[in-house]
Length: 455
Image 1: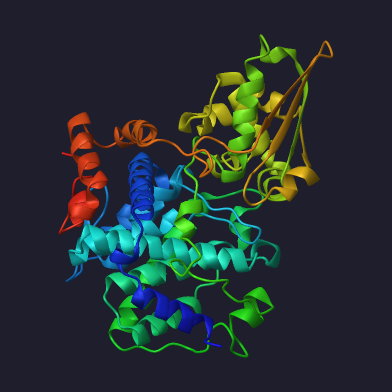
Image 2: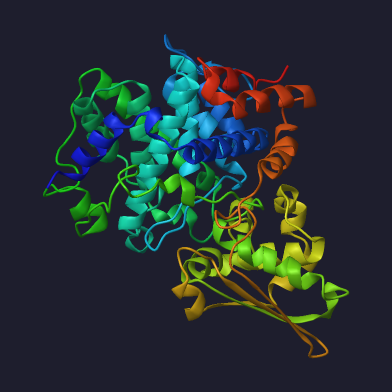
């Protein structure tokens, strides 16, 4: 039986654009467009500003472009800055599984950064993107890290290593070394997403991608890493998962491609609250005023309860990062405002007594029926009871943007444009979208990154 690294390295080396079915190519383009929009939307955030400041301190003989600012930095620091922007709003796509869950689109920061610096083609960008998603999702299917105390970006670093090694053109033996070098020193803790959530929540995968790029650059120069990194006496199975696992298969070998099972977010908040907010909006149409509400009961999957309502801070979030992962807070916002937007995580909303009071009337519980439908659906049973005793209910399985209820390309553009408006004029946005939707035709996919630069 080949080791996990041997399986991943062989797959990464062999995957070609010509292998990809048209629907997979189109899905990759949809997710790239969505991710670039999210990065532009996160440009003005404090963490993004910090990341750009650090990137600006680094010069390189092989520079890469930072989205929005046009700064030139090293491959790894530009990857970090671009990744922080992409993730900040918690608006980029996600993958859910009976094992781990997370956001494989975070790896697109590494893909676009390296492609721009190395002048890779649009077809190479699409191939590396599909590869990153495949690695991320297949490992997620095999193991659940959160109960073990580790964060999903531990898997994300492996995915970004695959993409970086592919774009650097490494042979199979060096791709294996990139995995060894990327995995051994880069295990991330789940505390990142628990309790009082800090700015680091939006930076953790960007850091994993930064480390992945660095590992691939080391491997390209002949550096070797510890092996077997998964199966060894002191390896991943021993220290992280505490038990062996096997990959069920990899895309293109009769297994389909996992990128087809990833969902675009309709609202800028945690993946597991998407169906809940849609259910809240459905019920909201049945009441005249939120002051009528006596109690709300939400029954959903265990992962949603644990991640979005699993600690007291979720009812009184003090930071944006806690609030966008708070089911009670985002439901209260949706019921009061008729939607959830990025502005609803600003300090004035976080301190709004009306939002906080309504959140206290929300109860969250596990639904065994919803749990049986995972991971295909994220079912939410939503029951609102008024002070007069009237009950209103909603049931939502697939939010808009879920791969079973996908957004159209027009809807993706409608999401993209207001995000891009943080940085670009309408005419610049038009030019950028035109290139992104035709990225497979570009000899130099870096055109897309350079078109994100204001002015």
